[in-house]
Image 1 (cartoon, rainbow, N blue to C red):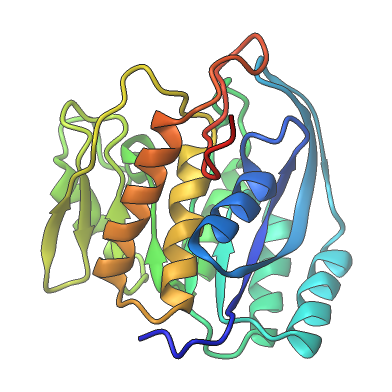
Image 2: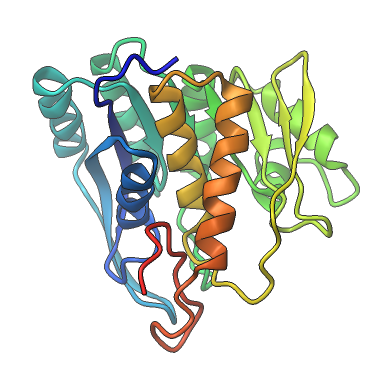
Length: 262
């Protein structure tokens, strides 16, 4: 339960110059939930609503230094991990987590951007599975990401995917349902299987919805919610952000709107 003091949550993720996803979406989700947001940037992308034009990785040394700086001064109540990109980055993030103590860790295994750009190479995927998932409190892959992580084909059910991801090491899994017919998220922690539903917004804007969901989940963990309750609340935040999405921003898929901007 939230004890009343302001919590601080760290996003370790890439920067989206268009402001729709990545650390920009994470900071908006943190603010929406009522926590102080901090960042350790893993990569800088040159992107807009149409596509990703360039990606430049931040050096492993600077990634670790960013985490160490905020952890030593401000403290970290929860961590959200997003874009990794390379195996070197994944290794740096693994090392950096030594500075955050027992803070819960949420991983959103970002593999492909909304426009189709590949954001996680094969070596990085292996490093994520081998190094980071065993350190994770909650993993939040969507259905295609869960298939890639587990090697299961399209015939696997959402529950089978959740069970297979959990076997890779995280303490809980939410396989998000944006790619399913019913748009149902499935939570599994080894004991409980729970379906999480939310209001549907077919006319909304969804760029950054995965970042928003995982960041809100991390923020609620920081505030003391247990994982299933955090996942339910995060689904509400992400659904509202899609429904209020900014469809008039740019020429491509518009960004979610976690802060209700008008």
